[in-house]
Each structure stands twice: as structure tokens, then as C-alpha cells.
Length: 160
Figure (cartoon, rainbow, N blue to C red):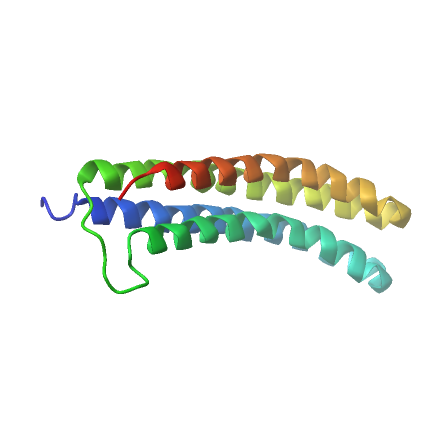
């Protein structure tokens, strides 16, 4: 049982959860926006390019979670083949550093998908208002970027 609660396990669990939760948020968000986009494109296929831009916006949270997971894997030596021996405190610190992007990525990805879906509907009625629709969805992105920054800075501050 003590091997399960090792520093290495906690660090990798943190990285995995960052990628998993942020990826789920992006998948849900892109799906929500995609449903709205399909409705608009069914009425006017010429709006495909505009609504595709809006659908893609919630996908960034998954990229941010993946980036943090890669940083964890590099930091602990998993990708080089020589894993560092981590104390439980070091592993828990890395785990904690992954949580901002994990949870904010989950929630903001879904929320951004809803905002992007509203932007899609705006473009459906007024195609010239694409920039406003993108801005509404991009406002949610601010919090994902802040969470990415917090996770990144926390990870960089952990000594191994």
C-alpha cells in the first residue's frame, strides 16, 4: 500500500488529471459548440468557416492540460527513461500544481463551449458579428490561461 502513495505516483497522477479533466472540458465544449454550428450550417452552408472558428475555441483547455502533463513527465524524468525518486511531499506538490489547470480547464472548457454556441447562433442571424461572438467565448479563455500560468509557475518552483 505504501508504494501506491509514493511521490512518483502522486506526481504522475497530477499530470494525468490535468490532461484528463482539461481534455474532458474541451471535448464537452467543442461538442456543445459543434451542435450549434451544425444547426447553423444546415441552414446556410456558407457559414461553415465562421462557425468552425467558434467551435475550435473551447479546444484550447485540453491543450493546456496536455502541456502541463508533458511538463510533469519531463520534470520527473519519465520521458528520458530515468524517473527521479520523489518524496511524498514533492509528489504531492506536483499533484497540487496540476490542479488549477485540471479543474479550471474542465469548467472553462464547458463554459466556453456554451459561450461559443451562443456566438454561433449570433453568426447564424448576423454573420457580420463574428468578432463579437468570438470575443464572448474568448473572455472565458482568460481564466483557463490564468490557471495554466498558475500551474506552470507552481511546477517550475518545485525542486527535485
